[in-house]
Amino acid sequence: MDITKKETTSVIITIDKLCNILSRNMMEDSEFIKILPVVAKICIKLHPLYHSNKVFLSLFEHVTQLLSAFKSVPVSPTSRLKLLSLLEQFESSLFKNTRFHIYLYNCTARDLPVNIRYVQSVTELPLYSKMPDSIPQFQENSPDFSVLVYSGRLQKKELAHANFCFQVEENVDSVGAMIADLKNLDYYTHDRLYLEAKLESLKRRSDIRILLAGSSYTMCGLFEEQMPLPARNVAIDAQDLYYTLKTIRTALAYNPNITHCIISFAYYFWGYDLSLSTSIYQYKRITEVNYPVFKDKHNFPGNPDDDTQIFLKSVTPLKKHLFSFEVLANQYVENAKKRFEDSHYFSYPRMDSEILKHDDITNHERAQKRAASHNKFFKYASTVQENQKLFADFLEEMNNRGVEIILYVPPVTEYYRNCINPDLISDFYACMEPLQEKYRFKLIDLFNSTYFKNDEFYDYDHLNDLGAIKLGKILVQALSL
Image 1: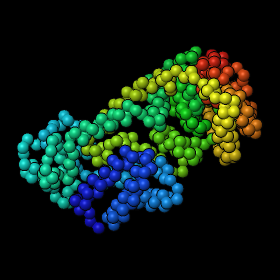
Image 2: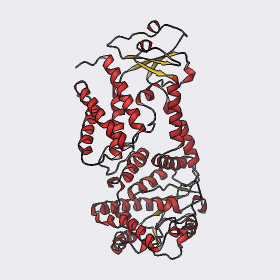
Image 3: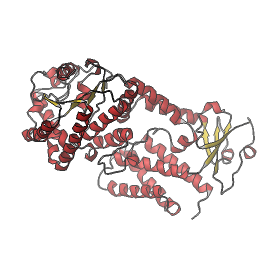
Image 4: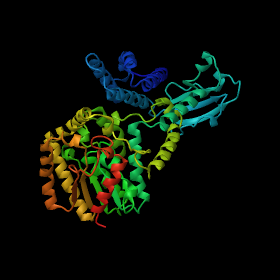
């Protein structure tokens, strides 16, 4: 079935409006409940026109799944984000081979950044010019679309002469919303940019000799400036063994002068595979942090390209194609990354202790909940086997390169220590001891250490700044300098 230019224009405008609504109300259940049936009706109406469009079929299938799940269980935030992503991908597919011609009325090209990749021409119309005479009507079979950008007020019949219409003030508002989003980075975008900044800085910092890696234990617990040689902390929250090793290898590719690597290695690390985790938090650590950085999904069952959160979520797909919001966004991103290069993960002192805020009973309950989330990992036998092989290969590679590897089991509070399953510890050493016999590395187990006091822990298994200074002193002594 042939699709007319008018139909294409109408579909683009409709999807653009849906994206705008969904991006504003992404986490509001009540709003989503109202919007989903509307999206479904639109998809049903469009199916005869776009049944051969693969992206549309993916969108149609996802909406069908959402409606089915919607009747029995709440729709997950991930599924909602995927809906927004698929809508944007579908709209973008309609722009293929399209040429846009922008006509400016009562405004100038200085008022908005034009995306020259998709915009064929920009024409400033004389003030008080007549719309029918000023905006050409492109032939039905041509890939050309007209876009009117104007300031002030125009009558509806005047707007009808262009395929798409925007008030210039609307674009200014979009720029403001985008800048607000970038100034207030969400947690996952922050971590992605932080990790990128730390790694990319190694291309310029050939003097770095010590790499601090692992999960949040290193992220919170070690300071670059405390190391005896120039150091870089590339650890981020919730990182598993696979992505820790990926981070280290990337760092070494950027700076082959690194000679020492300190890695946090908790007892549960052998059985932990971030890419197979089912929580929304860990899911987004793949789709919005690790995959955008490394382009490696490991064992992630989905397609991260589909599930990755749209970066400029306050800007609709059509505006992204017409105007250079990405140029402005990239400027803010690069400025943020420059700030991250030499900074701590936390930009403020972390001297508080969660333990001191509660009584013994509450502390035990909270620590038990935390430990329970770790005790489960050794039941994943296939993950343990995979990680053993991954780490053995890594140790052999590091031994051949002459990079000193120091592993440390992080210190914990007594509350957490008493809740850990002893089998987790014995299984940890059953995996570690054969490697100790074959490869050169140091293992410092601080799990049972009484050197760290409760006021030096931020929570039940993470140090605050006071504890981090003490941990740094211990690990510095282990370095072979």
